[in-house]
Length: 224
Ligand code: SAH
Image (cartoon, rainbow, N blue to C red; front, side, top):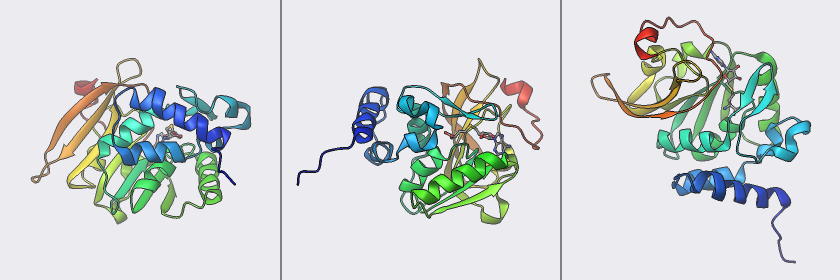
């Protein structure tokens, strides 16, 4: 019997082509992961008909599942290898988590809102994703017991550079983080250098829900 692609496979292929490849994402591993992870599983039933649209969607509690292009862009900029261990702050729906889990050895994902964390965990279990560890709590404090990480992805807008997280990154690793208030946010890509210094590789316009956390933000004014 010929295997025909399912409806959602067709929608994902179109999403990858029209929203992601067209905007310049080229890493074949990232494109494959985006074509494979079933985004409709990560949104409420009332939004499943628009799950593959070019936008973020509400996931409850004033939070959103990120736009597919943003997920692909952040993932590509982390420049990940299959054996890497990645820290994600802001599990949300678990969609970005699932994409990362296809690309690396282990994902450590922290979410402050218990309800979202539990739903995400359930979805990933249903999809048989096994290389993710979850924690409910304040992600601005990172996950010190498992540090250093090869890459760190922050899925909510920080007021300044998250120094605690930078401290949990291995030298040579990348931190991708939206910084600044809504309307003036930049998706920043940092690479950590040998002496512990960090270099800003890039800053691109973006719009994320705020990161709510404990870390002091001494440089928040400077970077806003
Ligand atoms: N990539 C996710 C995006 C979720 S939105 C997705 O596509 O579904 C950002 C998430 O960050 C929200 O769920 C919010 O609750 C969470 N968040 C905000 N501040 C946080 C913090 N300090 N620690 C952990 N999670 C945080």
